[in-house]
Image (cartoon, rainbow, N blue to C red; front, top):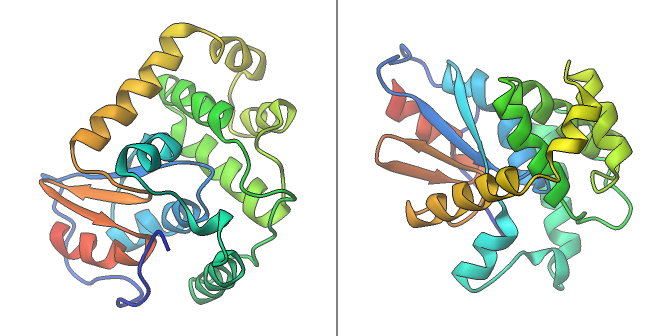
Length: 208
C-alpha cells in the first residue's frame, strides 16, 4: 500500500517552530492525501504549505503504481475506511469507478494556488469526493468546488487549458521527484520527508 500502518495518533505536544515550515505534497486523486490534509494543521500545530503533484507520473518514474488496480484493492479500501473512522472523519463514500482521472483537478489546484486559495479548494474537493462520492474527473463538479471555495469557476476552467499552467504542474511534479518524493502524501520538514498519512506525528515532532 502507499502508506504503512501503525504510528502514534493525535497531536504532538510542544511549540510549533515557525522558523521551519511543513510542505505537504498531494494529489487530489489519493484518499491517503485526503486523510493527511484533513488532519495536517491540527497535528502539525500550524500552517502547512500544500504542493500539488501528479502521483501517476511519480508512479511511472518509480516503476510501480497503486494497489487500486490489484488484488489488494478491497483490503486497501477497508484500511482507508478504518483510518478515516479512527481519525474522526466522515465515513468514506467511494466515487463510482474510483480511482478517477485527477489530472484536471490537479491543474485546477495549481491554478487555485496562484489565487492563494489552494487550501480552500483542495479541502472542498477532498470532502466532495471522499464524503459525497463526487467524480472529480467531471469539470462541472470541479466548477462547483471552485464556487464553494470562493474562486471564479469560469476563469479556472479556462486557465487549465493554458500550456503554461500545464507545464507548471509538470515541472512541480518533476522537481518533487528529484527531491525524493516517491508518493503522496509526503510531508517535508527541512531535509526530512515523511511518506504516509500515518506519519504526520513524526513530522510534527520534527517541527516541535
